[in-house]
Length: 177
Image 1: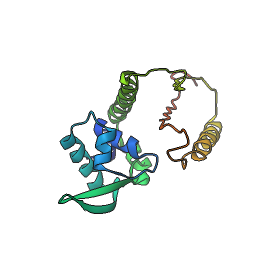
Image 2: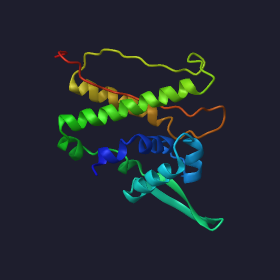
Image 3: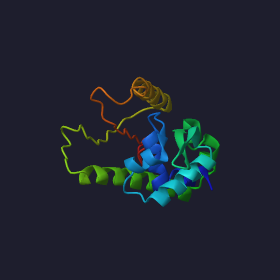
Image 4: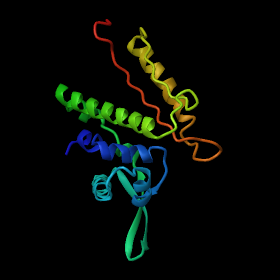
């Protein structure tokens, strides 16, 4: 299975999202977090990610006769490397992007179905801006964005913090040369 196929399956993508912030979680905690995913399906996909080395077993303990594992995301293994990206066909990229966007749509649908919906109070936003940048200016912008995000990635739960997802997409505009 290609790395893109491994990572962009809808259930596996949600497992990765649950662990993106560096938390460690048992499959039971993941099940609570992803309550709409059947348990057998979740266990199967967690096992697939662990077997591929995307999830690392941090601890194991016996609970009522079963072994309960606590997992951590191996961020370096949870992305498609440059060589794999270069080997992808346009159809592979379209399929990967479709899975990515479908996951994003599903996240938004779950937010809307969650009962209390107040985009203003929840600071929900989606925007698109057009920029004219050289490749060097684009690289500089991305470095600045990564630095701004990195300054906040070590903040954990508590102190009124809400778990949030920040999603970015950067594309050259067709005909924008």
